[in-house]
Length: 151
Image (cartoon, rainbow, N blue to C red; front, side, top):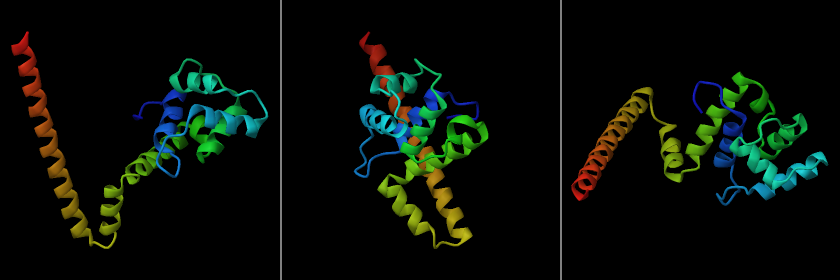
């Protein structure tokens, strides 16, 4: 999500992308819909949830959004309050990054570093990121060149 206001569909989709089962698998629409039905006692189908997630429907009841918030363990304000939604989205980004065990291990090792050490690690990570982006750009240029030669 960017700094502009995220749509309801974007917010729901982000929850599915980041909040996973303990084994790392994403939740299914049916699983979430069933939990929401049980929570609210109201109709809540997997198809309806898919429509909300893809933006084909965008006017759910407050109880449905509260049930979704409870399932994904985020405050209901994630859906209703733009500022809170932005803050929670940032926390979800961090949660998503920490699902990667290599990122998590690096972060845990960095906890004991001094400010200077953290700065050095940040500089190294930034330099590697620039180098990888440059390599990817070169690979893309090579693929484009090969495609145009083949035409």
